[in-house]
Length: 203
Image 1 (tube, rainbow, N blue to C red):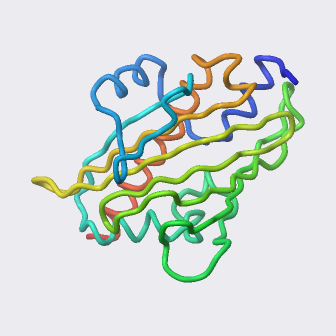
Image 2 (image 1 turned 90 degrees about the horizontal axis):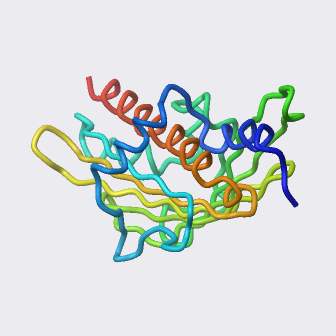
């Protein structure tokens, strides 16, 4: 099944949910970093859609890790990106943990809007060092299989957070350049929100 470029644009904007990044900045961010891995595993090497970026956060590693892995609290510091979030299992955030989160696609001339549901499974994790999860995102006329990796490294002046994500699926594969730009918007917004929240809580 295919959808129009306009409709795909409208729906994909909600997958990462972000704004304010140009395509040129997207390309530049990817050029400055190497692939991101956790326990030797990375993103999908065959994916046409991939994006990576990094940010220096001036806050304790424990605080950053707590924010990133307390999935059910994501809506409190990513209100534009995450409508709901819940763990699908109990106990500490660990390998094989599963969680489901949603984002809202607003109605517009190109799409009726609706809810996009992302169901993720943690595949690799080293506490306060890295995490890698995979899972599908499903909404009206859209299916994406994603792989997302994060690393957290203490450096002079704070913690270097790096992330890389890939998307595959019939709609994104039909226009990988556009899908990559939209994925980049989301990841840049995510690391910005993480930095803002962690540094605010550290003051």
